[in-house]
Image 1 (cartoon, rainbow, N blue to C red):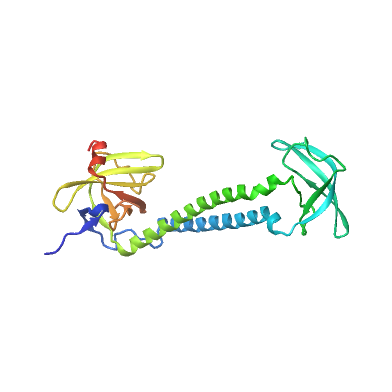
Image 2 (cartoon, rainbow, N blue to C red):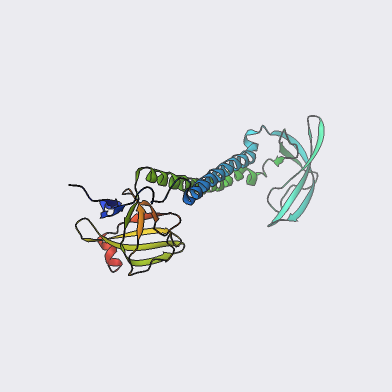
Length: 278
């Protein structure tokens, strides 16, 4: 005996459905949805690469005093220059000799001038051998020495957000590409029980009979208004075209839709149904 066509939803739920012919079903190759997901994946890769390279460059610059072979030389404080930039600061003018040549530089200890070395005081300066204007005063460079820890935390935060965006974008495209490669579009006409909108996501609570004729409730969530020209409302039957393979990721469309929309399917349990009043 020939088995009826079904659509596979999460938790093993199977609903009778009509198989759409390849000629009438939405096409994945060249579709607007595929192009949008591809662009988002490319954008996510670009963002992650920029954040990664920027973080490496920034962290390398901040940690240069640790690995850059800074040279310690005696230096004379030539003056104190208080200024305000998001707080009171003090620029200490320095004069020192490096490789037989006189150099001047300014160092900001990230503090006020109170308690800083007075002019004509001799201090020990740690000088970048590549850029003699980049100096630290030994004993007053606590803020600069702690910067790598601060930037390590912020860089890790930015990288984690960029990585999450990359993972979501690439996995979404890959999941839908896999779904279209092994699934077949089905048509069914469930009844709309509820429609809720949370921010930019719409959730439909639908009901349709299973293979035994028992009414089953499932939910579809998708961005925006979905692919349908008119917004589905409670109490009406929805002419639903769906591509599903038993997982959460689905593609949604309809006979009057120009494009497909990516969404998720969910089968609520009995407790969740009671909380929804169903």
